[in-house]
Structures are given as structure tokens and as C-alpha cells.
Image (cartoon, rainbow, N blue to C red; front, side):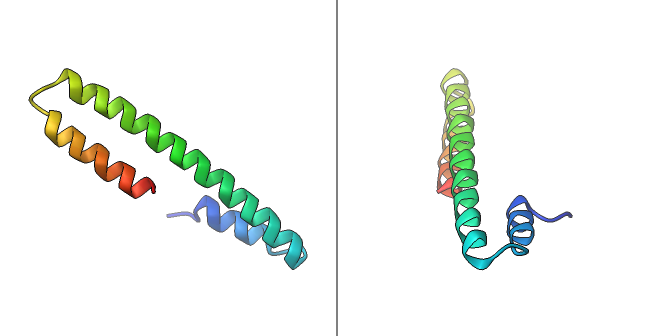
Length: 73
């Protein structure tokens, strides 16, 4: 499997000066974290909607959504 986006960001930034590298890397990590958090929330919202519309899988789907939120945190 290839390098993760975080690995690529850190590796490409390591060629610059340490202070610039650290600042840019931290900002990039923050933006990636925000994007992941937003994506997880959207995913969970859709999952909860599906759960509400399907009583036969409701509890399992809510449990999966809870796990997704915890993993996103």
C-alpha cells in the first residue's frame, strides 16, 4: 500500500527549513483533520437517516455510527 497523505505532507516538507516545515505541516494536518471530521459527520448523518428508515437494522446501524464517531475523534 502507498504512503498516506500525512506521510507525503511530512516528507515533502522536510526539504524546507525546520520552522517553515513545522508550521506548514501543522496547518496541513489541521486542515486534513477538519476535513476528516466533517466527512465522518456526514457519513454518520446518512447512516442515522438510514437507521431511522429501517427498523430491522436500526440498532446495528446506530452502533456503527457511534463507532465511526469515536474513530473520527
